Length: 332
Ligand code: BTN
Image 1 (cartoon, rainbow, N blue to C red):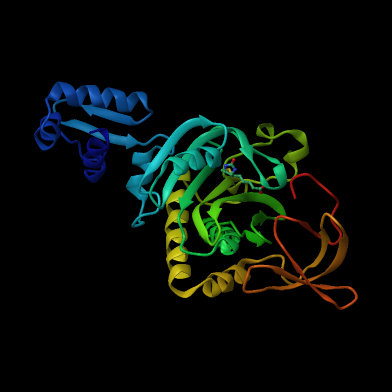
Image 2 (image 1 turned 45 degrees about the horizontal axis):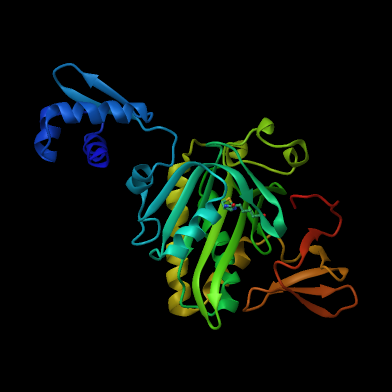
């Protein structure tokens, strides 16, 4: 009901919609409408009541409410079903537990805050309230389990394309799936999979985007390493519009991969990569070596030409890649 009231108000722009018209269109009493309007105001919607003329929606709250996402969404199936929480431990964990009970392809789990956000290599992910977009999607791809890691590359492309549409933002992908801006971490992606031999039951792609973080939101050791979209954007943007744009890109790339395989996605990935052509230090559990990142192969593995000229393929998950000259740090 509230979603329908918001749709009516939105479609009328700055012209008031009378309580009578809303109650006629939705088939409920004017008192019921008045109660819903109060509830929407409690959720943070700025709704003006103009005497004898009706209601105007002045401003939507800065929240990733399902009805807000829905009103910006241009996808066919991705994000059409949403689980929204104000605060959770980890959206990836919520997504996995819903998926374990059975859910459709494309479920979106989004939270304003994560108390125990998870990063790669068993690290944490700082997710302050309404200062970023912390979300997970459940996909049920027809790919083989060994191809699941390419979903992460796909997600990275979807995100970088969307953030770079905001004026002033010029982010790039650090292999395999970090998105950096001015050399600092803007986005992290953590993909988790549930599979059987030869069959993926589901993949959860969890993405964390720092949009409005401020230094005091981060512990000291992360402060100089993290960056937010708002630190560089030269035009206003909203989290909800950015999320809707990412989901649209993700759906398009996913359908492309289903139809044509991953080659076109990898081609896009190469365009946004800041790793290719770089001198890198590869820190694997059993060895550390230096070389130049020259390409990714059709599996998404990084091809590094070592200083002795030998080619090495690097598997994500096992290693840290750092610019050859960089210091160690926990977030890179
Ligand atoms: C990384 O280490 O770079 C990956 C970070 C992934 C963070 C996101 S935030 C939404 C989702 N839920 C989690 O617990 N983690 C991912």
